Length: 109
Length: 109
Image (tube, rainbow over all chains, first blue to last red; front, side):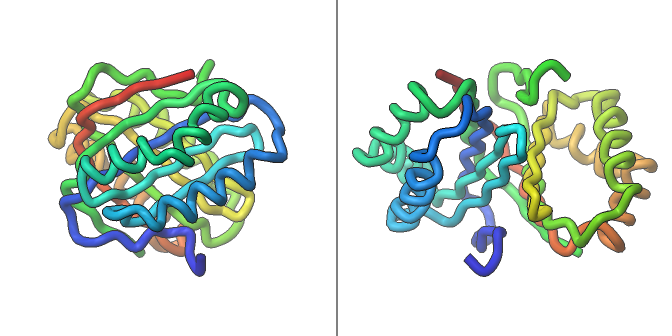
């Protein structure tokens, strides 16, 4: 990506806010995370994603989708289901997911 | 904080997603960011916040509020307005703000 910022359309659309604490180092994680990002981009209704994780292993990823149907389809994608299982079992000490409808957006400076 | 995760109530509530790229090092930034976090906690309708920034200076902060009125009041807080001005003029090369209504939430593992 040229930029870390997603190019989102005018609202309304949806955002999935994924906050997570990594359980520890795992060399498979980065490759899977990159593969999931590429896979998500091919999903109908995927609008973009942004992610930041600090040195302590706490991270926030936000993924933008056109609608709830696109979120559901991505959650149930077979390769993504396998990654979710590894996430629960090995990668994350804790995570939270929030699904929200974006009503307005702006940027700066 | 004991944990980096916000303790949010059952939906619905609002989330402000703030993605930002820092322009460079500035020793005033960390102190102001910490002061703004303390100040936000005293705002009526503030529900919690989560934040992660990586070594490249790209970060995502999500702030949870009970309703739109609480978001508006925080945006117009005098001390916060002064910090926003410094953010635009000195701290951020770019930022985006998205205001969204949280419809559902879950956590794991």
